[in-house]
Length: 304
Image (cartoon, rainbow, N blue to C red; front, top):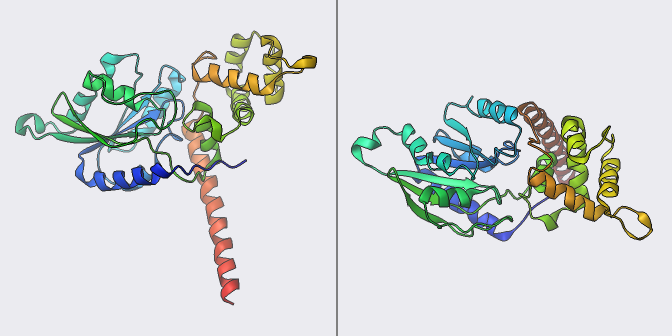
């Protein structure tokens, strides 16, 4: 199945971001530490140019600690980026963010000119909670589902930082379907868009290959079933998620499995690596090249 996402307010949000970017000194992008590549907005990468950026790897307490550092090193290969692993249960760390902004513009401590900062992030990445902690009051509405922030806000923070909040933006087309599925698995895409079983199979396949020991510990397996379907059936039998006749209720167990993954109950895990990012980018570029060639051939044939 292909995942595409076309909510109407996303186009408006992208337009607002395009208009605001030239006016800001710095961009904060809140990423999901479990998928730092898939939760980046490709539009921002194109529009930002040389504007400095702080990448916050939020939910880092749910992510693989070794891969947290690997991703920070990878992101900081771009000299206009500083990356930090954060989580919203460590409010002391979150409150340092205005100071991290000031480090880019030390002269502002002298001339007192405010630092104009835009903050953005995909839905359900924790952006609103971060804003509330920095502002030390409830400004942004929070919620455990995609697309809670609906409009732009302007917030004065300590350290002479003016924060421009933007609605959570997903892009209208996913060229990389692996990224789309990872976003669906972690809740960045609303749950009704993708079937629970499809998300659970995708996640199970990755965990079997990369986090078998965590699966063993969580579900008390002697050996981890080698296929996603077998894994979910085994968990369903263990948890008593059965229909009449003793068959496993796959929808119920898929939702339970996804919930445990999202809450970190299976363990700290990251769903992509820098190596996967480069590989998938090359594959997508090749797919788009073939698609463009076919389109050009169709046009030529039509004209002929």
